[in-house]
Amino acid sequence: MNNPLKFKRQARFNGLPFFMDKTSVDGGGRNVVTHQFPNGSGHLNEDLSPNVGKFKVSGYLIGFDAVAQANSLKAATSIAGTGVLTLPDLPFLHVRCVGFGYEISKDEINKVSINFDFVEEAGFVAIGISLLPGRMIELAMVGAGAALGAIA
Image (cartoon, rainbow, N blue to C red):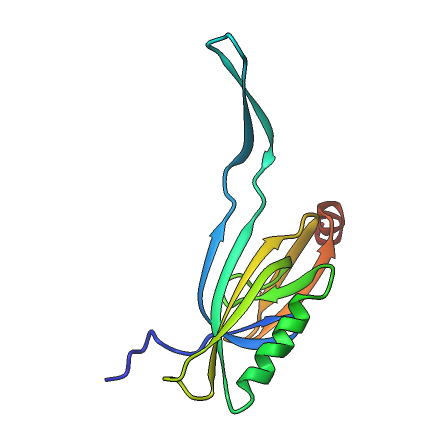
C-alpha cells in the first residue's frame, strides 16, 4: 500500500537540487555567558544576544549520475560566502555551509545519501510568495530596514 505522506520533497542549495528527508533547526534561546567569581558564592549572567540559527538537513540524490551530483554539491558547499538554501518548509534562507558529507550504499543503486550543516547568515530578511504547490517566487532583501521600507 502506498503511503500518501511519503513523497519526494525537493530542496536546493545555491540552485543545485536534491530531495530532502529531514531538517532539524537549532539555535533558539539566548547566548548567555555565566561568570563565576573566585572565593565567592555568587555568579553573574551576561546576556550577549540571541543564539545563531543552525540547520541540519539530510536528503538524497537519485539517478545514474547521483555521485556526480553529490560532488557538485560538495564543490558548492566549499565556496566562501553566503549561500541560498531553499527548503519546502523554510522557503528562502541565507546560510553558510559548515559541513557536508555523502554516503553510498551497496544496497541502493543510483542513490546517494547527503547531509548538510548550516548556520544562518545575519542581516537578511526573506519573503516567500507561494503561487503553486512546489513553486516559489523568492525575493530577498538585505537588512530589516530595507525590508520594512520596501513593504511599507
